[in-house]
Image (cartoon, rainbow, N blue to C red; front, side, top):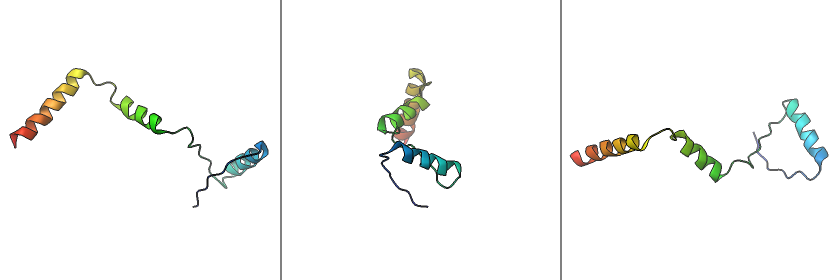
Length: 69
């Protein structure tokens, strides 16, 4: 499978590409919306439901294991 980056200059070309995608001849992915900030936001939201107490407890647990060695 080859991957190409194409700049579409004419809206008719976009219609042709969409028609090819409907025929399962090509797959179109819009990567222009995925940036560093989006990735960072997703990573931050994964652990958004942790409280400060839970984070502090986890840090203390890791420190205790590290210093016990």
